[in-house]
Image (cartoon, rainbow, N blue to C red):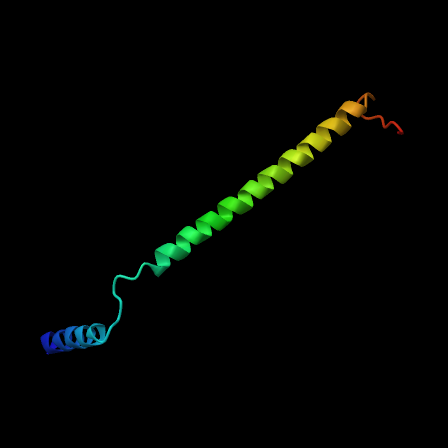
Length: 74
């Protein structure tokens, strides 16, 4: 009985594929590569923003020469 059910499943799958279903579709791979490129671009933007903020912090730190724990007014 199980052999007939398996044969029927294979027959139905073959029939469905013969109607024009693309069984070698690369859409999922394209979506993944697009996601990787998008994230890579976003990471590059964040790295640039991070570098700018670090430069800002360094310039502010160089401007203050107070001892640790004391605040100076500028």
